[in-house]
Length: 63
Image: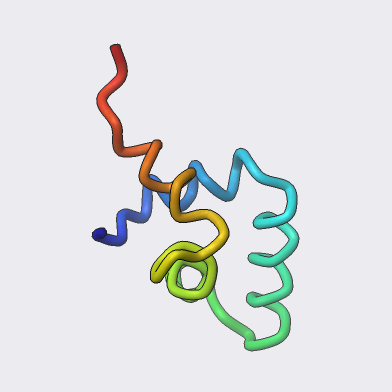
């Protein structure tokens, strides 16, 4: 599975819990949004994370 910023932004946009987590990461670690998104990806999506299936579904072709 590959990190795609656009997919990650969409996942966060669609999920209030991830929006709050992103904001927390940015504040706690003084991160720019780009870096916080990547950190969120590694903690919540990869390796069977809670949002892995939702993230993968964003990559499926529409139709």
